[in-house]
Image (tube, rainbow, N blue to C red; front, top):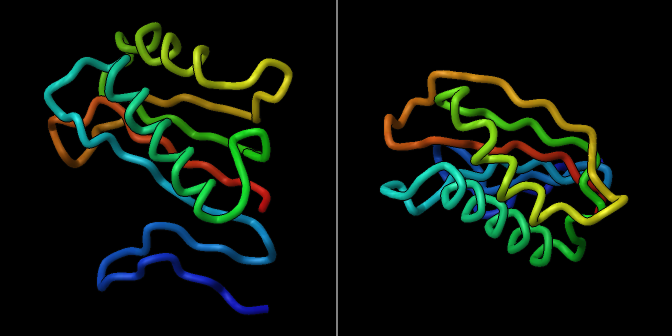
Length: 114
């Protein structure tokens, strides 16, 4: 089985697809905003890549959320809860991590079925 790399560059690809499983990490573009807005922005990017690949958020199998500051947990959850479909929430974990861009409040890694 081949690996499909979406918009590959030297250092990374936007997403990879293997065996009809999508691997994607979303980062926000609105770096001066709060954690709720950054999370909503990263989730919107997830919607866009999944749509591009012929699927949607109801097919997400697993999500890992990386927060720069654990105190932003409730703010992140406000955006997540508004976005995740009722009864279709994936397995999820949230960890506090030092993110490499100091303006990032959140990064979201997902695995989804096509």
